[in-house]
Image 1 (cartoon, rainbow, N blue to C red):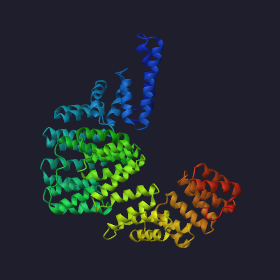
Image 2 (cartoon, one colour):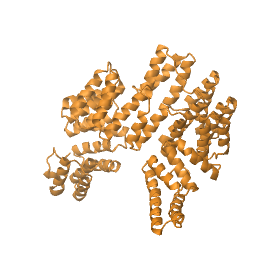
Image 3 (cartoon, helix red, strand yellow):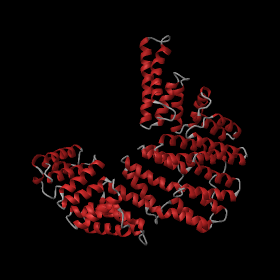
Image 4 (cartoon, rainbow, N blue to C red):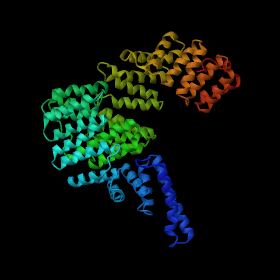
Amino acid sequence: MKPGFSSDLAMKTAVAVAVAVPLFFVSAVPASAAKAAQASISGQYLSARHAEKQKDAAAAAKLYYNVLATDPKNATLLQRTFFALVASGKTGKAIDIADRLIAINPRDSMAGIALALDQMRKGDFPAALKKLSRASRSRLNALVIPLVEAWAQVGAGETDKALKALNALDRRKAYRLFKNYHMALINDLAGKNDAAEKAYQKSIAQRSGPSLRNIEIYGSFLERTGRAKEALPLYRGILERDIDNPLMLESVARATKGGKASRQIENAVQGTAEALHGVASVLVPQNGIDQALLYLNLSLFLKPEFPAAQSLLGGIYENQRRWDAANKMYASISPASAYGWNARIRMASNLDRVDKTDDAVRVLRKLAKDYPTRLDALSSLGSILRARKRFDEAVGVYNEAISRIKEPRALDWHLYYSRGVAFERRNVWDKAEADFLKALELQPEQPTVLNYLGYSWVEKNMHLAKAQKMIERAVELRPRDGYIVDSLGWVLYRLGDYKAAVVKLERAVALRPEDPIINEHLGDALWRAGRRLEAGFQWHHSLALKPDAKNAAVLKLKIKKGLDAVSPGDAK
């Protein structure tokens, strides 16, 4: 549901549309034509609702717009059309709808905000403030409207009033982070460096870990005020957990060489775009995706070339499995931007998802060639090839990536692990084992590697006691990972402790009920524990989950003749 709607209201609208349409046509056309019109309009409305559920805002907007023409004063249709237009990035077209919504309800918050933003784009900040003064400040608008109001005051040349407007955010502790951050930006823009510094420091201190955007902006301030050496530890702090972050690598290079950092927020309109992007950034991890889409598109309405917002919007489309929409958004990011690098890697991954793997390979090969010291393009390429079971090619790519490493670091574990997986799938166990051990040398507590190596040893009937300890540790680190819990159950099975194996494997199935292998393992353990009727049921269930052809054949044999009829090598 979009903000502001209820299921009752939606139902009333559907009924209203279905009832109103024949009345509209009955005096002008024959009854048969009126019926057809009713079916058409009702169908478009229902199709629009379906498009909303499918996260296709563009289709929903088009359909709602058509239905709205038959009932132009219907407040619910106006709201749905407005939200769909904004969510699909057609904010300019939504402005006309916003005017009509305000005529019906002068306190409509989202319509009022959109109209205020339109005035700000035109440079009429007093008109924007007037629009905002009438809007309701309930719920999230208690955060959004003070932020927009503050930047409108900046545009009107009233810095003190802008800072005062932010005091409204003191009413909620969670909003004070926004207050300090935007106090810093406003003071920074006004040239009040001491006040800006204090606010930036407060903003960073409020976070458990500063956001990338926060570091980018504050680092820029430090560089612009002749304190580049103080910015370097901030940039390097990000690189410690994200070793190939292009934005931070660019920032470190610039600050080290004495380059000039650009001002990120140059005017009130850009400041407002920053505010809306910030609100969306908080909403995304809280599953407020529908609202985040609105605020991101409003942000881009003000500042079309805004890589941070474009990247976040592309990420939302990816999470919605809208690969083409994501790639269209990523393609809009300038390659010259530090965000452009990651955008092109994401585009390649999405090309693979729509079965354009060769195109994805070409994109990543070019990136790897253009930047011969970077690892991320090769890492992504290796992952794609491995997932496509092109293991020989994957090994070659990982070899190339690892050859670029002068001295392996803890964060490089994943390259050795990934190459190890590719070797293991090629049945080159000695090299696979060596890579897994190297990965653990770099990251001794890495649960994925502990599990994979431990499970592989179990499958090969090697080092079972050591494998058990490794997998137990992996379970401690990730107790809700069904695959790792399955590994522990399977090692207990191999050690002959069938009752304990059943307990662990039942837990694994509860965590991963859709996985045929885990269900099969539980069936095997139940059989060995003497619970043969339950074992048969579990094997039937595993078969229904559509395993690959080899496993399906083994399951059918187990169901027909029992576990003892299957060779140990097949009962995996």
